[in-house]
Image (tube, rainbow, N blue to C red):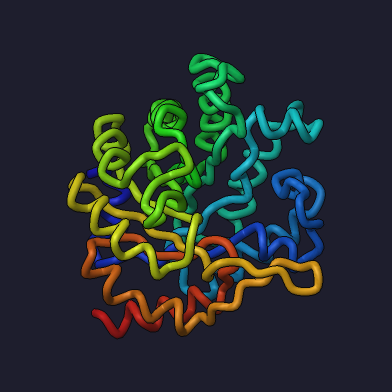
Length: 292
């Protein structure tokens, strides 16, 4: 196990953070707008989100860099600022953490499809490597690869992130198939776990895609297929549209009620994804303390 993860897990399961996008939207980010450039234009609002999670008890927080790769930023006309955006994202979270939490830099999908030839493996590797280098140079404690659905793409992202020497968490979103236990590209938890372990990921897991009720089985299957720490970050239920706005109706208490079964299934890191907030992290913290 990577020494950073070993130290984190020495005292039991680790509480991570919650959603960033929906929290930034509450602070004025227009729905559909890429949040990553806010690291430069609205750093104080990004820092508010990070500080709120640290105050709620997160021992690991992420960064506002999920879409800060060259492929996404090119579409936003911000590719020239890639280095600045990634370095600022890490710096903001580290400032907010103030030594009370570790900072794992968030790295998301390219938005390009390998299978159609829209991008090559070499282009993906170069793009993810560029992003990861900036994250590491800014002082990130680890890299969390999130919301992937294509096994080929996430393996390339793992290879790029591993070049930094930082611990790498590799997560896929299981939201498809009759039982919502496959990624959009048809990857099962077992296939993901085996392939990501072989690729050198230091921890594996699942985030986004669905509400927390479906994560028990996913967690168990990941853990059975690969003996690595498991990272779980579920959504606050499924979103609903109300008055033209996306709303998540699950309460923090209902969300946190799943903690015992997730721990029993093998989860090592617990947090939240879309729709969750610092209140969800406080509720998770209370349940984790009960489970000690």
